[in-house]
Image (cartoon, rainbow, N blue to C red):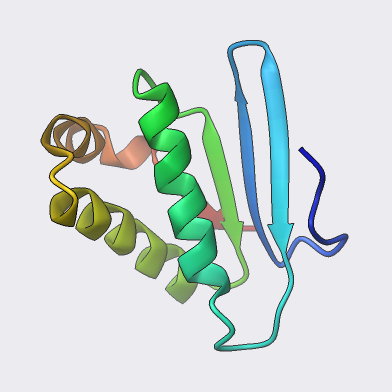
Length: 99
């Protein structure tokens, strides 16, 4: 998958099953970077389900914490009970952080 930006302000990195891809988003404040990154993170969680070889990098601690909360909220709202349980049991393995 091609990068959508050369500046990794918010970035999602996935490595697993012999494949690896990266996505990066660059936009001004309030443009929805965290929302988009969270959606992509949840989509990736749904695909792999077994473990969490995903690294999401955000610009601020606030965005990282907000993203973790959104992941849990999305899984609750969309009835992903089994995946939600796994995420909550292994919450510390959610690699959503700043650099």
